[in-house]
Length: 266
Ligand code: NAP
Image 1 (cartoon, rainbow, N blue to C red):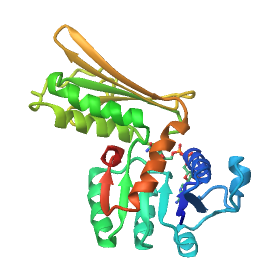
Image 2 (cartoon, rainbow, N blue to C red):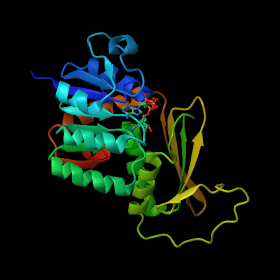
Image 3 (cartoon, rainbow, N blue to C red):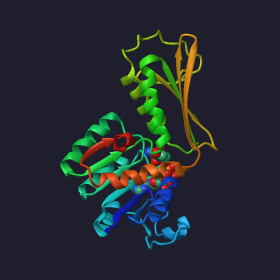
């Protein structure tokens, strides 16, 4: 059996390390390269504590792709560089699995056009945890009957972007799930700027950043005399790995931009 060749971009980061551990443990996958701005020259086996690979972290994505000829690149870097990384991946004729958040709708349209030109598959998923995907699906369903909702998303204090990609996608799904558009309410008198959160797709989103958290989200729906809360917690970064592995295995057989892990799930 020929193994699927994988390069991890953002390899020295928290998610990158977890992805390398998960990939190394799979019989059908082979970690052939690791790229990061930080930790260049680090031996991946020593970094992850998992043997079975001789990969060392290098600094240049394009050069690594030329040298290792992977089937898929998994990218968990930063919102500041993800667009450039996607371009490099597609220019090299490689499929991509992108977990880095912070891409706007405009960015997604641009990436869709580039993916079509390259004739490759690109999955961009704001959340790889299966439970989070279900939370979003249930939120869309609830919005049909309870259209008024607010989102509280909570993450570790080193997360760069706010609100989270998951919160924005959930808000879009709530908007799409409503039977009709909400009637706008008068602007609140905010005594502290931002107290009502940010309005995206007519859903207020509140972002909490604290040490000790990983990735959590509550979607609260309010109706007459009742509320409904849908809550998901990623307690550990391993929660994202089954979704990442599923995406690696599926994206090599697909073409075009796919946004959201739910589109790869049966
Ligand atoms: P992190 O620990 O800061 O890791 C990001 C790594 O990427 C860092 O080592 C960073 O180096 C490196 N990097 C920066 N520029 C680079 C470049 N040009 N090429 C290669 N590597 C580069 O962050 P994290 O917690 O792993 O999260 C990474 C991203 O994934 C974030 O956008 C986060 O929101 C997202 N995320 C998504 C999911 C999901 O399910 N989709 C789940 C968790 C996290 P420096 O530290 O030197 O900048």
